[in-house]
Amino acid sequence: MTAPSPVLEVTDATFAEAVVAESRNRPVVVDFWADWCGPCRVLSPVIEKVAAEFGEDVLLATLDTDRNPNTAMACDIQAIPAVKAFIDGEVASEFTGALPEEQVRAFFAELTATPAELAAAEADELAATGDLAAAEARYRELLAEDDDNGDALAGLAAVLLERGERKEAEELIERAGSNRRAKALRHHLFLEEFSAKHDAAELEQEARHEPGDPRARYRWGVMLAAHARYEEALDELLESVRLDRHFGGDAARKATLAVFDLLGLESALVREYQRRLTQLLF
Image (cartoon, rainbow, N blue to C red; front, side):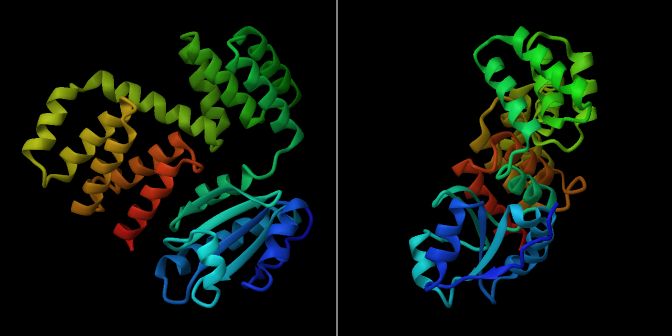
């Protein structure tokens, strides 16, 4: 890994060249912030730390929205901190709010692809077309070359789950550690188990009868997520956070982040609820 690029401060006058033009050479991540913004001060050291890990592969730039309103308006900045990644002159990915370090790192990781990740993506395409046998063979080839390939581990686990081979799939997910897709699979398994253990009608009734109970709102939110009713789930989980952000060891906040993992940082729904969560927490 080459030495990290210094954080570049950009302005209305320099944005086009420093960000848009440079993004044709490498990804450029822009952190939109302002002096008065508390969550911005939380995010800044996190994003700078993560950016340093990627060396010169990704350029981190910052823009003060108060001093550079024209660019903030052109980039449709409605809440800060806002982070946008530019590739080939266009916004390729973005998020709003002070995300945890792990999610910021996943955001950066998606902007760069290693040869192993590209090979895993080819296997993913085979799985997406329904050729599970070919996908499995390719994933296993990749793991024979590198048994720590997180994308191959998660991809193979997904294929095995599709076939009902849960034991080996769970072992692969555990080996994949913090790989984003593996995390999503882990969340799916948890939601599947939760749904099997609880009665949806009872949890809904509990939440309706006890609207001020953070536990009831959390449990109903998790059940909604288990049924892929994600927007309703996020509404319930954020209400649990609002009622008692520390309930169950931050259970509702953690469940909210899990739903973000399932939907992906590129989701417009995630961006909206990241903003709402940040407002609740800060």
